[in-house]
Length: 486
Ligand code: SF4
Image 1 (tube, protein in one colour):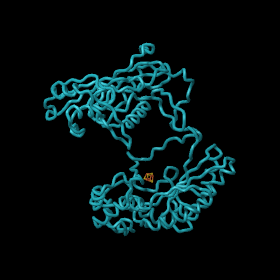
Image 2 (cartoon, protein in one colour):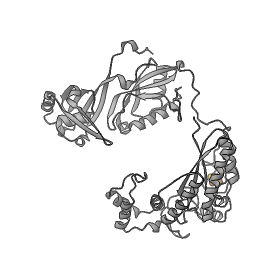
Image 3 (tube, rainbow, N blue to C red):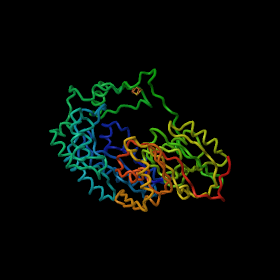
Image 4 (cartoon, protein in one colour):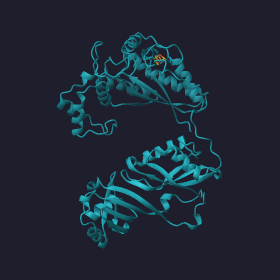
């Protein structure tokens, strides 16, 4: 793994405030760690801070600038001329924590502190990242919210709010309108809670006792640290019953090693490529291409398959899919190439994977192919699909199929992420037949729903109850690259 950014999270600028939040690290610890990180070859340290922590004063905020500059200096002393990125988020009190009764600072105060920090850090040649104050305000409302907020949520959705956690989608004016329309006041949720006030989450037992949280709050406000029970005595938070639930600590991992690391790469001639065909059925049809990628990354790890890994910032097991299957389509013919250490048989790979894959995904075939064989996406030519229609849509199906086959052209225009793609469905169709409620087609480019839609003259969403299956993939013949039998 290349040494990109190393993250350290002091959370607060001063030792005093770090004691309040029981962070357990001093400025000295932080600088020592920064020196060690720069000396070990990292050039960039990312520092995470929060503003608005309980008892915070402007002095604590100013200390963020000073301590960040000190961290940068450690890079110079370590001889690597280190960079520092400073990320500053706003503190949001959370339920089931000692600060669940504390107020959240107002959006105006957040902005004021950000306005102080931005130029002050820039002057020291430090790059600052921060979170939008309105987004923190909204987070604070929902973090300690109650059932009344469901009205707000529905209203915001009605007004068009979506994916609000991504700043580019966050529309503060729509949320403002939603608050106004529902008569909900954000400051009601940001306010200090009385210690004897019933809290909306009181009925949820997460194991930690209320008395413990109150005592912790008192200790925090007095700046008295609570020792970490992994290294010291139990402070009786209430999570453990010391029979079934108790601390289970792993042996410390020696410095410089990793608990989980990809095996070292060997010469490429020691690798081999195994091509698999697998099915994706039932509920698995709702997994996206990226989710399938994650599923296989986890499966090869669990199955302890000796995968080859890519080089670069984040090594990944080397496998490549033939195509990205659209969500909602079941498949009996998904193909993937995997690079593994030579000597690992195709049969062993099939068995190991099938022992760990979830229900609905199963490897049907596995065979060794030449390591330099062309990518599946290059040699893929045609795909056979089956569309099983609900009876209500299958009216006069043979006649509609005949009419479509008689067409010379059936242009399709597809728009995705602002890009327009145009091609002719009729030219992409090699075979088409109808049997009862079932359409079967062999196609080049195009999705089964696009063909069904053109054949039946119905919009795509009319097929939401149809069953879509990928039956077979036809590849271009490559006689010189016939698979080696396993
Ligand atoms: S040992 Fe268990 S009960 Fe004691 S402080 Fe730690 S987590 Fe809480």
